[in-house]
Image (cartoon, rainbow, N blue to C red):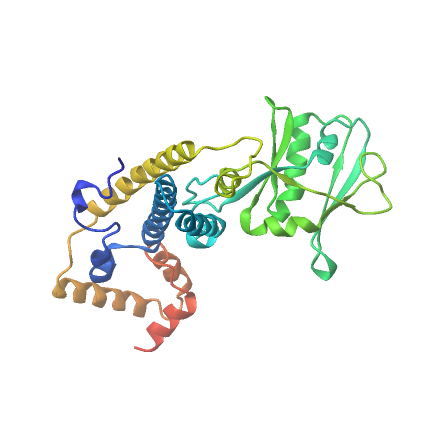
Amino acid sequence: MIERLSPSHRGLRFPDELLISRDPQRFNTFLNQQITAVQRASDYLGETELALRQLARPLESEKRYRQLQRARQWVARRALLSGGTIDRNFQPCLDRPARVIFQCPPLQALLFTEQREVITFALGEGTFRHWSSLVIEPEMPLTQRIFTLNRALGQSHIWCHYELAEQRLLFTVPEDRWASLSHWAVRGGGVCFPADSLTLLQPQPLLSFEQQLQDLLTGNPGSLPLTAEQAVRHLQSERQKLHVSRQQVDSQLAQRPALLDALKAQSLAEHLRVQLAGYRGDYRGLNQALACQANLPLALVCQLVDSR
């Protein structure tokens, strides 16, 4: 069973809201974001696990239907309800955006063609279309071809790698950009792709835990059917990983300095005022230093000093 809190904060909800509200000087922007991300991810996985456990109990047909409907809606709204902290495989992504892994078989020909070809990618439609190009040379080894692809596709936040075991080319894109790939096209030089027109690409996402979970909740047999027990074990495993992250955050909090009394806080504020006054209008360097503790816009720093 996964513990809710570490011993240092037993009896309180994680994170300690009272510390955040009463002692804000102990928390910089990054730590606040880390705390929030861990909590949102943990809450979402916990509620998902609870919904699956409730479905395992004997229920009347009407109650079971309502519970299934709520569970399907909960899973479908994952990105919103988790704040982007849980990806399609229901794995935490606390320090990176959730990504979609997909394949696009027609592009794999670019790795093995023995003829020179200029490839142009187009993403979007109309005046908002983004273009990027690359050149495939016959003498290019596989690694260089992948590097060339990433240099061009990276401008559209698309990255690729080659799986030797499966012998397939895989791509990743941030989940919030996945919908834009419905307007992803390519033009070649008449070798791998036609030169006189754009060829619409059809990226195919890999089977995800989310899709398996939706199949389980709708009763549709998928290619790799998932049982409720397997789903719960997966969620428990990911929650355990989050528990480790929470312990790391608790460790950071424990290393923070003690509470400041009123006199110490006033002394630090006066010291900061003297430093700000000494910059005499050159606030850029000071703002960069302050950004280590909190992300203050440059205009805000200027306004605070000028108002003295």
